[in-house]
Image (cartoon, rainbow, N blue to C red; front, side):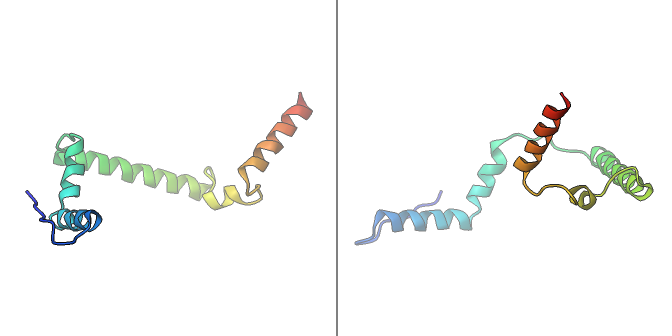
Length: 99
């Protein structure tokens, strides 16, 4: 338990600051955050399976980009309005003129 004694003429704000600094030094906030939510311990097999899944997914995305089936993020943004609102207004105008 962390204890901080108030010194002669010390303000409450300074006392609280010293208290929080001591708590930071012992990683109190980090341990509280980790204990806030229960997380099941992972096993090696599950970690390996999820790593393989991510690797296969990454390889598939790279393959699709390479053969041209999937657009790169930069090419998607080229030639389109920078502002999201402008894009919505353009879609609304197209929908009104079509319908």
